[in-house]
Image 1 (spheres, rainbow, N blue to C red):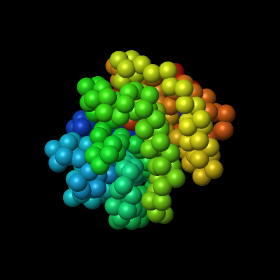
Image 2: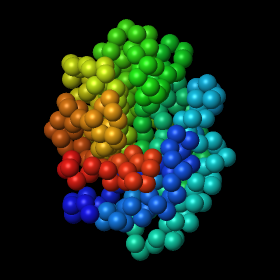
Image 3: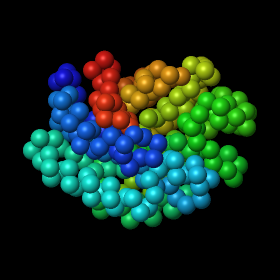
Image 4: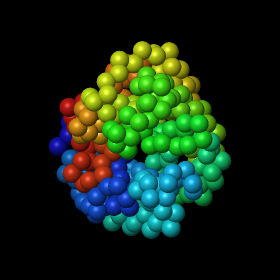
Length: 267
């Protein structure tokens, strides 16, 4: 059982995620009930706009368009099945991709009426006219850092993109909780950076506060062998607390056993 203070996991994936596990949605719910949670949100990845990444990589990142309706139907089914036992929210994790704002808005307009919660995350960075996943692998991360002029420049690019995500006009269905806001630190133990640009981080946090957005307090980084910290951590987390930006615990579970992971030890 978790301590009484935490009753919600706001970031959970499903077997519809192509880079996750095939654990049944019911098994995620049973784990939440076992922990004493009262509310969860399934935040499966929204399909990426067509043409962002190479087709094979794009298929690995998110479900296909034709799978979303099945995902929604399944969540409706379990909402009914577990009614009175657990509040289950139907959501999506939406990628902010610089240059694809209009395409993202169109997808959100398509799905928005079905959404009860969600996340806006940055996984993909634009460099010149190409797009790269910041969290795909240590090797690709190193290549990307070299391409942009070093690790600090890569951190700058990630946080500048995050600020654009907060400010972007993605229509009335834009999620108002920012997913894993320090994801760029996913390989920090292999590529350590003492990031000094507090001014940029503070701009992001002030923008979050001004819009009354929430932050995903995401424990998945603790399970990443080259990270071993929550997102956000360090200066970013200090600023979140300083400006009293609300955060919601999220396990970012891609397996049922990770629901509610490490919540108790990071209150």
